[in-house]
Image (tube, rainbow, N blue to C red; front, side, top):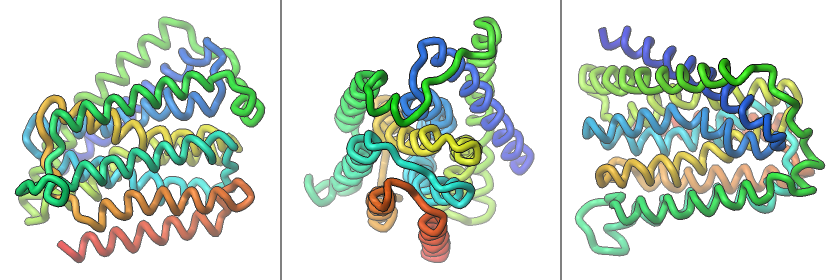
Length: 318
């Protein structure tokens, strides 16, 4: 039954994310917002909803290791595997805005989470906890990010490097139906997924930390993977890179922030290696982006290799 629920959960989450993203993107295009902004906000939010629903549900059920492992694992998965796979499909061009503002903002998010997970170092606490106060700080950063993103929505740099989105093909009723049905799929699918993953963790004798970093993180990041690869294949680098950067920012500032407001989240299961790679993966992506302002195929392969080495280390370490 756990395996069946796991599969049903994945299917519902992916279907829900797909419908919600289609509906939200069509709605955003009525305002003629650029592809980069759509990628950073609407698409990133839609594809990050599986992480939000899964982590939020995990916190409610007191599976905090799965919640934090999901966020950290998903961001590492996004930066290394998704960008890597997308670049292997087609080299990804990086806009000046992404290079100078968006990627640094994602780096800030990763560094903020790293600092907030150092309670034993800075506050002399017995364990690492993301408190309600930490959640408010993260949500404040999220509000700043949203203000910044919409303030550049019609900037010359953004619009010059990505085509302004065309008029939507869907009517308003269809858009509304996609959004509602997508949310329903995400909510029910996320609940099934967390319950099944937790049961499997106990039956296999595997820690919830590893389940969160691997199965849950990979499963909830599949919408980002599919979206970015398809966008790269169609030559839309703005959506491909914007989706990943925006998702990483949403995951830390919004998802962790909201979950911490509901209940303090223990981060004891997150290792220094996880946090260092969380920051290091963004630095690596930023460094590759500086080379001719694109992520080449060999750089994409390098990102995937780093992720596979990290995954092997995480599994064998536990």
